[in-house]
Image 1 (cartoon, rainbow, N blue to C red):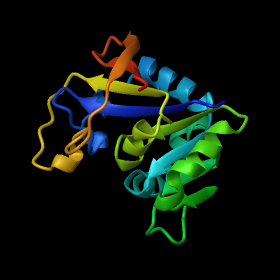
Image 2 (cartoon, rainbow, N blue to C red):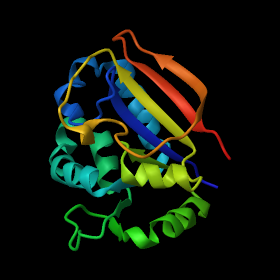
Image 3 (cartoon, one colour):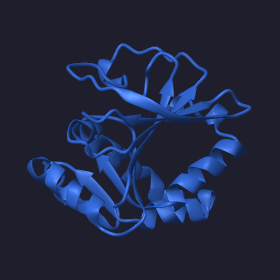
Length: 186
């Protein structure tokens, strides 16, 4: 059975929104190597609509700058949970309707293959946790306080709680700490 891994950049104050604005100073060779290992140990990307829109806009133009990392991002199967996306613009995209999401993701997880990678943490992540489908949560904790007036930019901002167990940590010279957690199963 495949694992589903959520990999999320987060600031010290819990902000996950707009990471392109506050993470680049910390993305060094160590971080790039681990990000590469994570991507290449996966054979599918799972995302919600917000992440999909950002990735579909950015990644097709980034292959030249990012080499085989960008090629892999663009060519892996992309699964997006959305009731409003009709015509995906990113190649290899499959739309999963919200009503079918848990069952469809469970089927994907039961297939043979490598891990399924999810970037970010939002409604899809919440559904994964609530239904026992998320295997690992990797928080890339950046040594920066971002501040936000928008609660939707926080890791969790309403009506959700879950317990996790620490599975491991990785620290980088840049000050970034990756804390890997596994959900506590009920």
